[in-house]
Image 1 (spheres, rainbow, N blue to C red):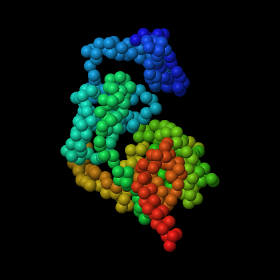
Image 2: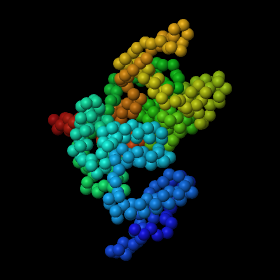
Image 3: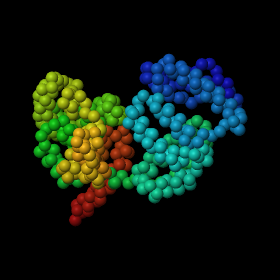
Image 4: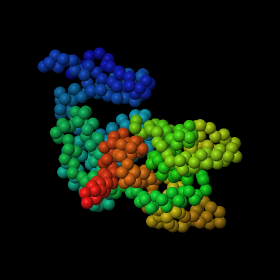
Length: 413
């Protein structure tokens, strides 16, 4: 391999994202110039030049190893997973929460397959170890699905890096059942009505308002917590979703381009939000804060964004208090830091019940059940691909299909 010149830098997003590659000489058969694969780097342009130099060195080393295969040890799954996670961490577009999920998923992968080199692992080993993992440790199909998705990502990169031939990719033979979409919990129509009655009976405060918005729109928790008044048009009953407040307490854009959308709300919900806006304005003024267009709709007492973790904890307590959830374990203990032997406190574990994200599933399930067209449901949920909506809610669509057959039958009598 002959690397010609200093390489090419293509600007994707000024000062943030670039693509780099090198001219690697001529094809001896066709005499055409060859290029290395494009590599995306998330950095400044100056740093991209450094990455280009590193890429050149990698290509030289790979060429040397290809000439002397005995010098080319294939990395283990552990080593390659660690490298993959390091590369992911350089992507500034990924939130800390996403990276934490990645680390969690790959921890399972390393536990099961870490000591195998990439070329040793087979589909039979993957299938057997995943099945045993589920039986021995009671892991759900969702966990196994995340493990296999992580493995497929890893081996896809290994094929691109030339470490594994495509036909020898063990992930091509993975035979693990996918989780049943119908296992996604959603409220029944009667449960939804009861929750609506509970919300309307509560004194208006920010977190209750968040539940009201979630029920009315099916917005993600981060989208609700990131919503500001400038994105709420109460006159036309529209909400514009342009950002989300993430688990790492930072504002980011929606999950995908389709996540940036405008949703309609009913007039009753618009009146509810109008009343809340006035109440919030008075509450904030009592703390010396002026409400404005950038004030979060679901704000703290000082007009800031609500911590997503604190909100989730409150929502679990709200559900338990109103019959939508329970704790498996409730135990009392004394705080050793308290005076006079410590204060009596309660520790709650093992929550089972409604989660905020299930308001989203409820919205979709009820809409599809009422024969709302799938493109409208896709838009309201902010799915980038209608196939995602179809896959997740296929069980509801099947039920609609049965009802459609009965409708046609009734017309023929």
